[in-house]
Length: 282
Image (cartoon, rainbow, N blue to C red; front, side, top):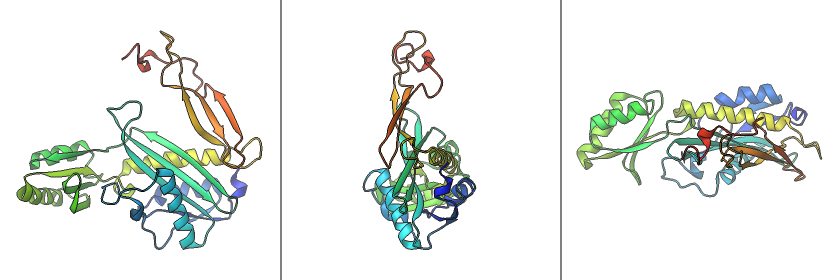
Protein backbone atom coordinates (compact mmCIF):
# COMPACT_ATOMS: atom_id res chain seq x y z
CA UNK A 1 0.00 0.00 0.00
CA UNK A 2 1.17 3.56 -0.65
CA UNK A 3 3.78 2.66 -3.23
CA UNK A 4 1.35 3.21 -6.11
CA UNK A 5 1.25 6.92 -5.28
CA UNK A 6 4.99 7.36 -5.78
CA UNK A 7 6.34 4.64 -8.10
CA UNK A 8 8.07 6.04 -11.17
CA UNK A 9 8.21 9.59 -9.86
CA UNK A 10 11.29 11.70 -9.16
CA UNK A 11 11.89 12.44 -5.49
CA UNK A 12 14.32 15.19 -4.57
CA UNK A 13 16.31 14.75 -1.37
CA UNK A 14 16.73 18.21 0.14
CA UNK A 15 20.24 17.94 1.53
CA UNK A 16 23.71 19.43 1.23
CA UNK A 17 25.21 17.03 3.77
CA UNK A 18 25.04 13.73 1.86
CA UNK A 19 21.97 12.33 3.56
CA UNK A 20 21.20 10.61 0.27
CA UNK A 21 23.77 8.01 1.31
CA UNK A 22 21.23 6.46 3.69
CA UNK A 23 17.95 7.81 2.29
CA UNK A 24 18.29 7.03 -1.41
CA UNK A 25 18.65 3.23 -1.31
CA UNK A 26 15.84 2.83 1.22
CA UNK A 27 13.39 5.12 -0.59
CA UNK A 28 14.10 3.83 -4.08
CA UNK A 29 13.67 0.21 -3.05
CA UNK A 30 10.54 0.75 -0.95
CA UNK A 31 8.70 3.33 -3.07
CA UNK A 32 9.96 2.78 -6.60
CA UNK A 33 11.00 6.42 -6.91
CA UNK A 34 14.03 7.90 -8.64
CA UNK A 35 15.94 9.99 -6.11
CA UNK A 36 17.66 13.14 -7.32
CA UNK A 37 19.56 15.99 -5.65
CA UNK A 38 19.22 19.74 -6.12
CA UNK A 39 22.24 21.29 -7.83
CA UNK A 40 22.03 24.51 -5.83
CA UNK A 41 20.91 24.03 -2.25
CA UNK A 42 22.12 25.67 0.95
CA UNK A 43 20.22 24.49 4.03
CA UNK A 44 22.60 26.48 6.25
CA UNK A 45 20.55 29.56 5.35
CA UNK A 46 17.77 28.05 7.49
CA UNK A 47 19.99 27.45 10.53
CA UNK A 48 23.27 25.87 11.60
CA UNK A 49 24.02 23.53 14.49
CA UNK A 50 27.11 25.57 15.35
CA UNK A 51 24.88 28.54 16.09
CA UNK A 52 26.00 31.31 13.74
CA UNK A 53 22.65 31.11 11.92
CA UNK A 54 19.65 30.70 14.23
CA UNK A 55 16.94 28.30 13.12
CA UNK A 56 13.76 30.25 12.43
CA UNK A 57 10.61 28.33 13.20
CA UNK A 58 10.20 24.82 14.54
CA UNK A 59 11.86 21.75 12.99
CA UNK A 60 8.75 20.93 10.93
CA UNK A 61 8.63 24.44 9.45
CA UNK A 62 12.30 24.21 8.48
CA UNK A 63 12.00 20.72 6.99
CA UNK A 64 9.04 21.80 4.86
CA UNK A 65 10.95 24.89 3.70
CA UNK A 66 13.82 22.63 2.64
CA UNK A 67 11.43 20.45 0.64
CA UNK A 68 9.79 23.44 -1.03
CA UNK A 69 13.13 24.99 -1.97
CA UNK A 70 14.43 21.71 -3.40
CA UNK A 71 11.24 21.08 -5.41
CA UNK A 72 11.36 24.59 -6.83
CA UNK A 73 15.00 24.20 -7.86
CA UNK A 74 14.41 20.81 -9.52
CA UNK A 75 10.89 21.41 -10.87
CA UNK A 76 9.56 18.33 -9.05
CA UNK A 77 6.50 17.64 -6.92
CA UNK A 78 7.94 15.18 -4.40
CA UNK A 79 10.62 15.84 -1.80
CA UNK A 80 12.00 14.57 1.48
CA UNK A 81 14.01 16.45 4.10
CA UNK A 82 15.21 15.90 7.63
CA UNK A 83 15.83 18.26 10.52
CA UNK A 84 17.76 17.22 13.61
CA UNK A 85 17.48 18.54 17.15
CA UNK A 86 19.99 17.81 19.90
CA UNK A 87 19.92 18.21 23.64
CA UNK A 88 18.98 16.43 26.87
CA UNK A 89 16.72 13.42 26.46
CA UNK A 90 13.11 14.54 27.13
CA UNK A 91 12.54 11.72 29.63
CA UNK A 92 16.07 10.96 30.83
CA UNK A 93 17.39 14.48 31.11
CA UNK A 94 21.05 13.76 31.86
CA UNK A 95 21.55 11.75 28.65
CA UNK A 96 22.05 13.56 25.31
CA UNK A 97 19.61 12.67 22.55
CA UNK A 98 19.20 13.10 18.81
CA UNK A 99 15.65 13.68 17.56
CA UNK A 100 15.40 13.38 13.79
CA UNK A 101 12.31 14.68 12.04
CA UNK A 102 11.88 13.32 8.52
CA UNK A 103 9.25 14.84 6.25
CA UNK A 104 7.91 13.86 2.83
CA UNK A 105 6.08 16.60 0.92
CA UNK A 106 3.98 15.65 -2.10
CA UNK A 107 2.55 18.59 -4.04
CA UNK A 108 0.74 16.33 -6.50
CA UNK A 109 -1.45 14.72 -3.83
CA UNK A 110 -1.14 17.61 -1.34
CA UNK A 111 0.39 15.38 1.31
CA UNK A 112 2.80 15.98 4.17
CA UNK A 113 3.93 12.79 5.89
CA UNK A 114 6.21 13.18 8.90
CA UNK A 115 7.89 10.91 11.42
CA UNK A 116 10.31 11.32 14.32
CA UNK A 117 13.09 9.10 15.59
CA UNK A 118 14.44 9.78 19.09
CA UNK A 119 17.78 8.16 19.87
CA UNK A 120 20.43 8.23 22.56
CA UNK A 121 22.96 6.92 20.04
CA UNK A 122 24.61 10.31 19.67
CA UNK A 123 27.96 11.85 20.53
CA UNK A 124 26.45 15.33 20.95
CA UNK A 125 28.41 17.53 23.33
CA UNK A 126 30.62 20.56 23.85
CA UNK A 127 33.17 21.81 26.35
CA UNK A 128 35.37 24.76 27.26
CA UNK A 129 38.97 23.58 27.15
CA UNK A 130 42.05 25.13 28.71
CA UNK A 131 44.81 22.83 27.50
CA UNK A 132 45.73 20.35 24.78
CA UNK A 133 45.12 17.61 27.32
CA UNK A 134 41.56 18.88 27.80
CA UNK A 135 41.12 18.96 24.04
CA UNK A 136 42.33 15.39 23.54
CA UNK A 137 40.24 14.06 26.42
CA UNK A 138 37.08 15.62 24.99
CA UNK A 139 37.89 14.41 21.48
CA UNK A 140 38.32 10.85 22.69
CA UNK A 141 34.98 10.97 24.51
CA UNK A 142 33.04 11.95 21.36
CA UNK A 143 34.39 9.39 18.87
CA UNK A 144 36.97 11.63 17.18
CA UNK A 145 38.36 11.31 14.51
CA UNK A 146 35.56 9.26 12.87
CA UNK A 147 33.21 12.02 14.06
CA UNK A 148 34.31 15.58 13.28
CA UNK A 149 34.73 18.49 15.68
CA UNK A 150 34.14 22.24 15.66
CA UNK A 151 36.46 24.66 17.44
CA UNK A 152 35.69 28.30 18.17
CA UNK A 153 36.76 31.07 20.53
CA UNK A 154 33.78 30.65 22.87
CA UNK A 155 30.44 28.89 22.81
CA UNK A 156 28.53 31.89 21.49
CA UNK A 157 31.37 33.58 19.64
CA UNK A 158 31.21 32.95 15.90
CA UNK A 159 33.87 35.36 14.69
CA UNK A 160 36.47 32.62 14.28
CA UNK A 161 35.14 29.12 13.77
CA UNK A 162 36.62 25.91 12.34
CA UNK A 163 34.31 23.10 11.28
CA UNK A 164 34.61 19.55 10.00
CA UNK A 165 37.88 18.80 11.80
CA UNK A 166 38.94 15.16 11.37
CA UNK A 167 42.74 15.36 11.56
CA UNK A 168 44.42 15.16 14.99
CA UNK A 169 47.39 17.39 14.15
CA UNK A 170 45.14 20.03 12.58
CA UNK A 171 42.83 19.89 15.59
CA UNK A 172 45.67 20.40 18.08
CA UNK A 173 47.13 23.25 16.03
CA UNK A 174 43.80 25.10 15.93
CA UNK A 175 43.30 24.53 19.66
CA UNK A 176 46.86 25.70 20.38
CA UNK A 177 46.28 28.94 18.48
CA UNK A 178 43.11 29.69 20.44
CA UNK A 179 44.80 28.86 23.75
CA UNK A 180 47.70 31.17 22.95
CA UNK A 181 45.37 34.03 22.00
CA UNK A 182 42.61 33.59 24.58
CA UNK A 183 43.68 31.06 27.19
CA UNK A 184 40.71 28.86 26.33
CA UNK A 185 38.60 27.57 23.45
CA UNK A 186 35.26 25.93 22.94
CA UNK A 187 35.13 22.52 21.28
CA UNK A 188 31.92 20.84 20.18
CA UNK A 189 30.77 17.94 18.07
CA UNK A 190 30.01 18.64 14.42
CA UNK A 191 26.43 17.45 14.05
CA UNK A 192 26.15 17.82 10.28
CA UNK A 193 25.19 14.41 8.92
CA UNK A 194 28.17 14.00 6.60
CA UNK A 195 30.53 14.65 9.52
CA UNK A 196 28.66 12.50 12.04
CA UNK A 197 28.19 8.79 11.27
CA UNK A 198 26.09 8.27 14.41
CA UNK A 199 23.57 10.83 13.24
CA UNK A 200 23.49 9.33 9.76
CA UNK A 201 22.40 6.01 11.28
CA UNK A 202 19.55 7.69 13.18
CA UNK A 203 18.40 9.36 9.95
CA UNK A 204 18.33 5.91 8.39
CA UNK A 205 16.09 4.63 11.19
CA UNK A 206 13.79 7.63 10.71
CA UNK A 207 13.59 6.76 7.01
CA UNK A 208 12.43 3.24 7.85
CA UNK A 209 9.70 4.78 9.99
CA UNK A 210 8.71 7.07 7.14
CA UNK A 211 8.43 4.14 4.75
CA UNK A 212 6.30 2.26 7.26
CA UNK A 213 4.04 5.30 7.63
CA UNK A 214 3.70 5.63 3.85
CA UNK A 215 2.71 1.97 3.58
CA UNK A 216 0.06 2.44 6.28
CA UNK A 217 -2.99 3.86 4.53
CA UNK A 218 -5.88 5.66 6.18
CA UNK A 219 -8.89 3.41 6.83
CA UNK A 220 -11.23 6.27 5.97
CA UNK A 221 -9.84 7.73 2.71
CA UNK A 222 -7.09 5.30 1.67
CA UNK A 223 -4.36 7.95 1.44
CA UNK A 224 -0.89 6.80 2.57
CA UNK A 225 0.74 8.23 5.66
CA UNK A 226 -1.62 7.12 8.43
CA UNK A 227 0.95 7.63 11.16
CA UNK A 228 1.39 8.24 14.87
CA UNK A 229 0.82 11.88 15.81
CA UNK A 230 0.47 11.55 19.58
CA UNK A 231 1.98 9.27 22.19
CA UNK A 232 0.10 8.86 25.46
CA UNK A 233 2.10 7.85 28.52
CA UNK A 234 0.81 6.25 31.69
CA UNK A 235 1.65 2.56 31.41
CA UNK A 236 1.25 1.40 35.05
CA UNK A 237 4.19 0.09 37.06
CA UNK A 238 4.11 -3.68 37.57
CA UNK A 239 4.94 -3.33 41.28
CA UNK A 240 3.08 -0.24 42.57
CA UNK A 241 0.61 0.48 39.79
CA UNK A 242 1.67 4.13 39.47
CA UNK A 243 1.40 5.50 35.91
CA UNK A 244 4.86 5.76 34.33
CA UNK A 245 6.04 7.84 31.40
CA UNK A 246 6.08 4.75 29.18
CA UNK A 247 3.65 4.53 26.27
CA UNK A 248 0.14 3.33 27.09
CA UNK A 249 -1.50 4.33 23.81
CA UNK A 250 -0.84 6.10 20.53
CA UNK A 251 -3.03 8.17 18.25
CA UNK A 252 -2.84 7.67 14.47
CA UNK A 253 -3.99 10.59 12.33
CA UNK A 254 -4.56 10.97 8.61
CA UNK A 255 -2.96 14.19 7.37
CA UNK A 256 -5.46 14.33 4.51
CA UNK A 257 -8.92 13.76 6.05
CA UNK A 258 -7.98 14.08 9.74
CA UNK A 259 -9.42 10.66 10.63
CA UNK A 260 -8.02 9.49 13.98
CA UNK A 261 -7.63 6.13 15.64
CA UNK A 262 -6.42 5.28 19.14
CA UNK A 263 -4.40 2.11 19.66
CA UNK A 264 -3.92 0.92 23.24
CA UNK A 265 -0.78 -0.91 24.35
CA UNK A 266 1.05 -0.56 21.01
CA UNK A 267 4.19 -2.22 22.40
CA UNK A 268 2.24 -5.28 23.58
CA UNK A 269 2.88 -4.40 27.23
CA UNK A 270 0.16 -3.74 29.80
CA UNK A 271 2.55 -2.88 32.65
CA UNK A 272 6.02 -1.39 32.92
CA UNK A 273 9.19 -2.58 34.66
CA UNK A 274 9.66 -0.74 38.00
CA UNK A 275 13.05 0.50 36.85
CA UNK A 276 11.13 3.04 34.72
CA UNK A 277 8.84 4.06 37.59
CA UNK A 278 9.45 7.43 39.29
CA UNK A 279 8.12 5.98 42.57
CA UNK A 280 9.97 2.64 42.65
CA UNK A 281 13.11 4.06 41.06
CA UNK A 282 13.17 7.81 41.81
